[in-house]
Length: 240
Image (cartoon, rainbow, N blue to C red; front, top):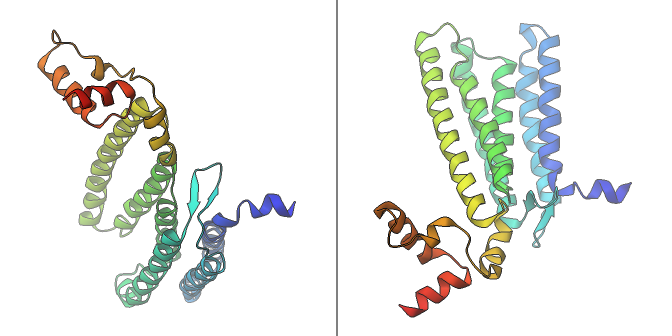
């Protein structure tokens, strides 16, 4: 059992942040307005606890988790520590701002930690699906934070425009991921060099564009042959 649990060791900071966000939401719903500071204190405690877990699991050797979807390496640990410090500064300096505008609520702190969780997932992503999951978690939290001041027409309009722009960007990102998957056959970043080197021939239609094809097809074929790593495209580059 302990070995099965240790397989999730690289993900312990993310699991801790998620559990604390759930706890903050429950506590904030149970207390009155005079004890709203509990969400603020627990948010800072969450950042401190996540930093301790990150430092405890710091290693010079990269470690993969979740079947290669998640990676824990020195770069990701340093970036996470930087994120904890940045979010802590944001929470401390925004306290008076929130009180003046009636936004000193647990929702703000929960959304901030959810956004932090999304950034943590993106930092440790080693697969496009993990990257997209973290990006959407960050984006959805920011949408809600923009519209947190419900009585403000400006905030509501800004949130709607931000949501439309984010949805468009998300669709373009998914389209790009599908093109990468069509070229490499995988969304995992670590397998791309191996797949490019081991491919005996390229089955992508742009590589086989003939002279009778449209100018756009011939242009795409020339571009793809310049970066493709299959044997057919590599031989074509050597002949040049």
